[in-house]
Length: 394
Image (cartoon, rainbow, N blue to C red; front, side, top):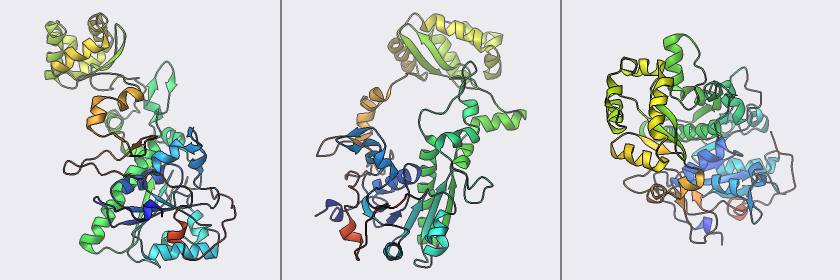
């Protein structure tokens, strides 16, 4: 028997059933977080093909690592949502569920008859979340929006990068990931409202561009204060100085100072206490004006020491500093081990990365790997339907 059918679920969302109609990243990231917290997540996939991310590399033993990371702890069934018979199965599942998550392009679910207005007829308490690039009612709603498009249109790329090389995207698909995070937060809030206030069906509309815009607090504060769009500053903070990467003897080191007390402590630590009383460096605004000169002072000190020595000296003095770790170093650090960043399952193989929050000292996480395509068909599909290949809906 499929272990997913007998696994006891625990955590803050235990007892919640989620129908996951989403694909690739934003929606699956949302539902993956909910699975970590104990929700039963039923992933609806295209027959014989599955989620597009099943076919995205890299692969280990023919299985997508990418798909595995995002779809941990879920159950997979195959439904052709163009089929009346398979939609009838979906409607039956919705009656007994709490949440539906989808990230089709706006308008697709209505054409299929699986939009919020349609599904709430089957469950008047349903929480239905739609994740898209621009939202359901934007003038851009019908346009495709990959993560890089959202980063570009939200203004995030305009403040990311160096003046010499121009705008760049973040190294991760944070538009998708953060939209998934906000969706999971909104769904949990809607479920709370339902339990506390008896709310009826609720519709949640999350747009990647909106999410990225809302997160740019430093840039927005500069825009509103100066009535001018902020520009590229590389790794340097646009307001606080020194707050940047600096050259050490064997690499770059991050130093982050955002208060006068910290700056005074820093100057003592590097053996240049007089810098804190220099008229050019009395406060953040003046230090930012003269940041090039201050950089020379700092790198005279860091350049004679290794990254490790710089970090040891500054951190022990209470000054924020860090080496720049690669992902291998980050995931294998003592911090990552103590904080249980990676979940190592009993069968070995590729680890999982679960949601990062502890509840009363316990970190809820899935102990079940991503499902084989359609492995739960026998559990959730009471009537036999064809599994012929169908065109993926975009």
